[in-house]
Length: 234
Image 1 (cartoon, rainbow, N blue to C red):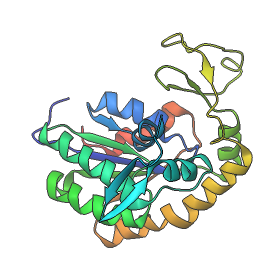
Image 2 (image 1 turned 45 degrees about the horizontal axis):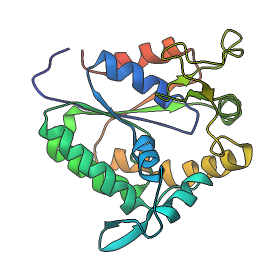
Image 3 (image 1 turned 135 degrees about the horizontal axis):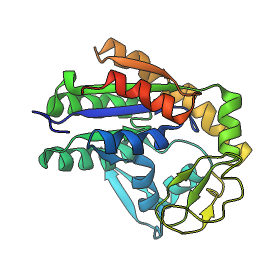
């Protein structure tokens, strides 16, 4: 799909709402680069060395400390996350690429830095915010059954047809659970963090004049995707 100017798509929702699954589909359909904040963080935390840090807003954020927050379900320090994301946004815009975010920004602090930058680069009229609404019982079930492929981190949706799968049908690598992150006690923390620190962004978006589209995320994946496609420029 060719456009006269690149666009920016933001998909939001609680942990387990299906952001990653929809982001994969939407990025392919609309030829966007999928900037996955969780993967930027995972890459930073893969083998952090003691004393290694990222400097943001004049402060040092040590990777070992940020990794502990991430592993226990708490959101990472906003300036640390924003530093990683802003650098990537500028790189992609410089390449004239459309960009898609899933679950970013995560806090008001991040939003107040990232959104003005996106508006300056892409234009407010070219920013599309989509919120996937899913009840907490459904979210808990999804996270308890979530598996990813070890190689490419493809999410494998749980169903009677997939529950016995041991290897990813796309790349053949073993299917694994995200150790720690999807455990019930950690999920409780993650959902609380979402309610208290991420949901306030929705009011901020509206106050700043960004259009927010709410989609029923409890539907079948194909139905959610169809509803998302309807609100994006063809």
